[in-house]
Amino acid sequence: MPIKIIKILLAGVFAGHLLKANRVRSVARFSRAGWVMFFTAVKFFWLVFKYARQREKELKKKL
Picture 1 (cartoon, rainbow, N blue to C red):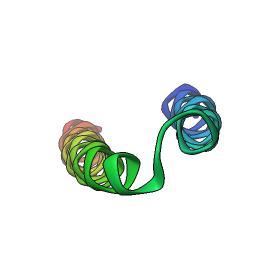
Picture 2: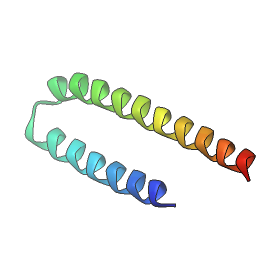
Picture 3: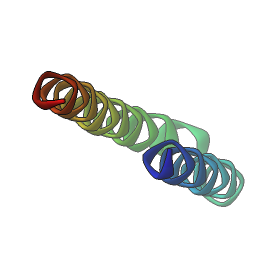
Picture 4: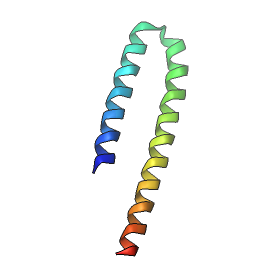
């Protein structure tokens, strides 16, 4: 449960940062950096998600 809350908070902060960056910087420069950041975040969240699922399965096996 706490992992879900952390993910939602991080996603919120990340989205807010992207919106701010979009307003401040030129769109062309932002879009490139934005996509890199976006894919990095997605990859990171996917790894965390996979790890959490794996841990859940292991804990269920032990019980």
